[in-house]
Length: 122
Image 1 (cartoon, rainbow, N blue to C red):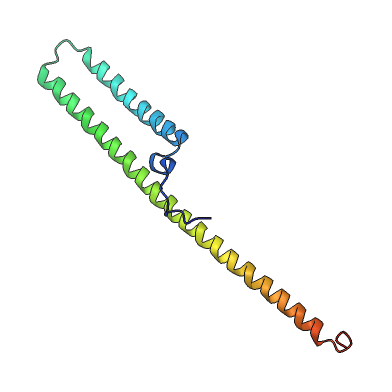
Image 2: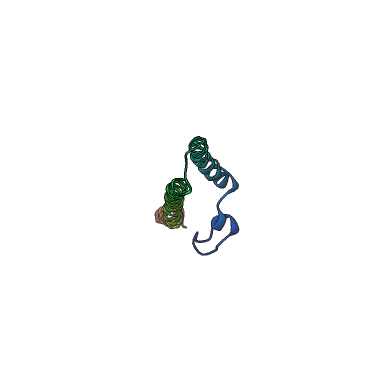
């Protein structure tokens, strides 16, 4: 087993297809709701270009805010996943060290018990 952060893979960089699909669905739903709101506003005959531009600016800032939130959340999840992978690697190392120590102790104590018996060695 290699250390998790030692080798970068395409899957680690871009994420899995399932995660990307979930993010796309979430963002599509929220953006679709924003587009529907804009369509409702567009039915007004008295809308001037300035008010339409103001509406678009608000919608664009809302979209930008959502994109920043999504990217921030994805970065945070990546950091958490990296930390989890590091701890898993550390657990594997400690587990192997304990296995080696236990095996050595068992073999050594068995040998000591067998060779300390007076009637086995003649």
